[in-house]
Image (cartoon, rainbow, N blue to C red; front, side, top):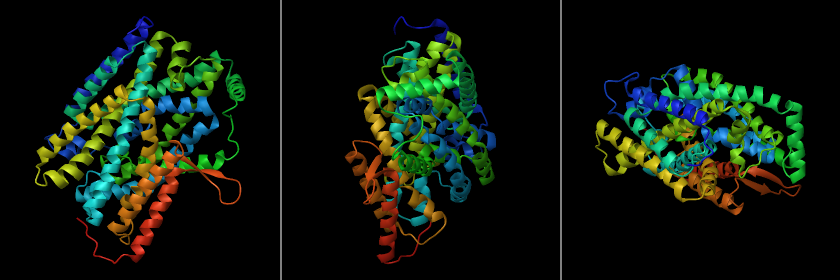
Length: 491
């Protein structure tokens, strides 16, 4: 701890953190089932969440603390290119509207808890199930770590340094998630999302008035980009293809992650999911407003050691202590909700698609729930250790890879909902090529998820995840066409 602590900001922050901690433990009694010793109840909230709960839960784990920190930071650094998150969060909802109710029905009808369950039920292949489950777990781990990056930026702005405050926050998170399961982040998401809306609306309404209006905000950002020779207010050159493919690929990948699928499987009906596909774009409006804070950082002439400090520094500089504390609490809680859902999603995958599949096939319902609870603790501790002992860039690189990786599970998970033509060996071969080929392309590009392509004319840049997915599907089609057909197995 240092002497730059603002007592008012810290007091407000602690108040709201204690409030959500209490809510986390109260959640064990909220919509209380006969028992939480069942993975359906602990890991999916009894599959009983209606429209509003699902809206807050999915929005809460889709728009995370790292989103609040990283999107404005990217806009602050590169300008218009950082707005790719807006079209992708628009494109994703038609996909959700069409596909997710079908997936939800399959999961509900057969008692599936994870994407791995769905794949094994469709194809009867333990190898393909394990590939999908393992991809989900390893793609989620750095995502959880990045929530800690967002929380670290907030704690730093509060004047709290070192690992102890971060460790305390995640110990508290681990305890109430262990106790209440998915009900805890679902209940906390109500408070978190309302706070985030208040913070962002207040910021975009009041900060420009302190900086000479939006005309000055954009002019200052443009001047800053020109002065440093990088970044633009508008897309330029070959950014158009990169922007479009990154947005489209990210949209396809978004609901392949275990945490977003957990919110889908926890819904009480396909109609609830369709309603949410209609309502959730309200968060896209919020994200667009939030991204503008990156431009405001230039107008405020902030002196930053790291671009990820732009949002906390803006609030600390331009607002009173109590409102800064409120904003920091909103962002910190925005780390707890998705981190909880992510750890639950990863724990469900490990329990169902590894422990039950290979270690103890006869495990009881209570035993499943216990393994999932313990695994969720291990996942959180692992993410905390990554942030404490490894460079933040390590988690950033892995998260970029995570998007490429999780996209490779789409053919196995989605194609089987509509056709029985594909077979497990073909999909597994496609996954292998997409997963490892995509990894090599990202590594070859210096850990950037974009790849330069030249087809004889002017070269252009494409999102690596889409290239890997195209190779994945092409290999799956080719292998399926030449491999001998076998009777499909549906568990």
